[in-house]
Amino acid sequence: MDDDYGKIVLDTGDINGERKMREDAPKKAKKPKRKTSEENMYLNGPKRQNTCSRRRQNTPLSQFNEILTNIIDNCITFDTTRMFHVPVKKAEAPNYYDVITNPMDLSTMKAKTKRCEYNTIDEFQNDMSLIKSNSEKFNGPIHFVTTQAGSIVDRAQLLVQSDSIQLEELEVKVKEDQEV
Image 1 (cartoon, rainbow, N blue to C red):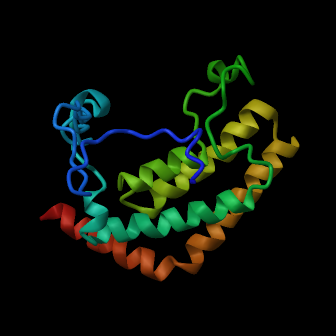
Image 2: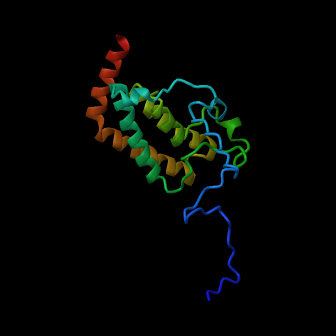
């Protein structure tokens, strides 16, 4: 005799050895589908114009800014102190923004390249030198932070010089495109 003690047997209405589904059992309610991120404007906010589309179009301006992005990335890896990667926080230096009226850092410059805001090499170099001049103004000319800023600016200058032919050609094309 089989030991069926402890086994629970559920009467499913077997007829002739075939199982029959209970029709009166409630079905699981399906969860409503989530809206896609495009449909849910509350999550994403209002749609804004994508300024990066120029980069995908492979225009001279996007190519120019792509080279500058690579230079900035190189400077970011070169900056081991990480002092110039992001803007100075007010909590770290409370009077910084009283002294420095035009702050600049590598992440701000990178964001500008992503938005294709640099049209000339001079604009890029002015922002890069602004990092050093802000450090000189706030920390003094012989402070180790200013020395590091100078090293980063020198590194960027070398990288610009190594890509100077391509950058100059693209700069001319950018000016031509803006005149049209």
